[in-house]
Image (tube, rainbow, N blue to C red; front, top):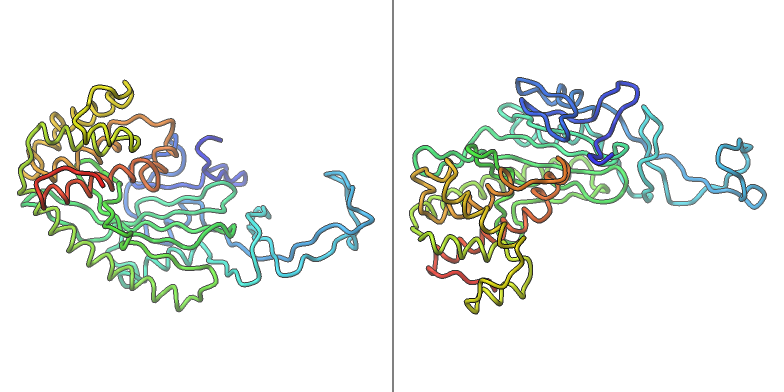
Amino acid sequence: MAHNLNFNSDTQKHAFFSVKEKAWHGLGTSVDTYPTSAEALKFAGLDYTVVKRPLFTLDNLNNEFRQGEVLPAEAGVEVPNFFATMRTDSEQVLGVVGRDYSVVQNVDAFSFFDSIVGGGEGIKYETAGALGKGERIFITAKLPSYIRVGNDDLIEQYLFLTTSHDGGGSITAAFTPVRIVCNNTLNAAMRNHKNAIRVRHSSGAGERLKQAHLLMGISSRSSTQLQEVFNHWAKVRISDAQVKKLVQLAMAPNKEVLQQLQNGTDDVHSSIYRNIVNDVYAYAMGDQSQQMETTAGTVFGAYNAVTGYFQNVRRYKDGEAKFKSIIEGTARQRAQVAFDLCGDFAHTGMLNVN
């Protein structure tokens, strides 16, 4: 299953929902209006609970049993301090965790978001879903406010949360600005990832609530900072040749290519790299979203050319590959490089990569 979405054999549905648009191979549930957190939980197939249950191994007399054999109840020896996490609806084992691990139910993840804006008023759930057997879930919610660049260019503000039931990671929530005109879900990350929080599964509900309000404070500060940054970039002019150089630097696959670019050599790279650069540059010069007052010939437009390429031009193997690239992979990395390059150029008028 290339898309890796959880499939519920009882409901015959994939664990994913989105508002107005289908994704992940067109699977899941598409709805026309923004749901409440309770509705989103059901639409996404996340209305299941997870429990911790003791782990057992075989004793000496039964350690060579074959799969499918029925073992006597006394055959198991309890494994101390370790537990299996299990879905109660399907009785599927999701992972192995330690004694201090605390299960964060899916409904609690939505409550985490609701608490950020006071009972869910104004927050709009865009997507949610589960991967694998249901061991990892994700939620994307849109905040009611915008980042305004110029008079008419609005950037939506999103919160993204992911957590797992297999002991494989903490609860992670992040602030992400999204540009309406190209529906760009790239994270315009400020340096040092200051726009994200991580909460351990051993933390109590009170700590999670505290972190929820902390995230809202981070989002507010990040929004103010980004609005100032983007509005400044929208007033800084950049030539077509400089845009091409910025794209070359942002898309450079390794340090060797970067060094060649810094030395003024730009004709010895692979055809794949050259084609990518040409596609990004063509998007920068020709896409309708790049002809706005805030983007045409500006540093802000150069940044959005890179992020817009990954959202609207680049081809991916499937929806999951696109999702991963944008959230935590190549697309996010290139966006961060572009963000740093634009920041340096707006400050110094030069394009350099350290």
